[in-house]
Structure formats: C-alpha cells, structure tokens
Length: 108
Image (cartoon, rainbow, N blue to C red; front, side, top):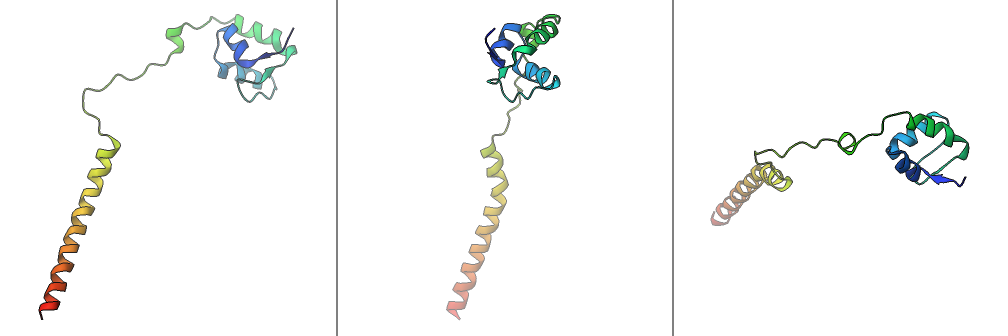
C-alpha cells in the first residue's frame, strides 16, 4: 500500500481535512497539514473510525452564512470619514483662530 496524503484520504472518506488531522493527532501522530503523509499502520484504524460514521452531505458540511441585511451597512471608509470629521473641523477652527491672531498681531 502506497503512502497517501491527508487530503487524499479525507476526500476518499468524505470527511474534512481538519477532522482527519484531529483524529490522527489523537492517535499520537504528529500531522501538521493536509499535505502530510498518513502512516500506513494507521490506515485500518482510520477507515474503521470514519467508515462507521455516516458520511456528511454537502448541506450538512456547509456552514450557513447569514443572509444579507436589508439595512445599509457602513463601509470602513464611511466610518473612518465620520470619525475624522470632528478632528478636521477642530483643526480648521484652530487654523482660522491662529490666522486671526497673527493678523491682529501684525496690525498692532
């Protein structure tokens, strides 16, 4: 039997890579990613464990995404713009105040 990668075996057993990696780690194997090789001696345990379970259908495995809200969501730019507007107004007020003071100082 040739060595198989985690992702290949997971596809055959119709389970996610994460599930298979978690199971192998619980058996004591140090599997880090979906590209790691599955040890041959663990093939029997894996097939027994996952074939005994009911394979998930696409609808069960896909997480539900929240539906789009009808209310308008603010973009990051809009939020940033609103948060900087008071600062800009204050700056302009300070600048005009400084200009007036410098003009008054020049005229005296």
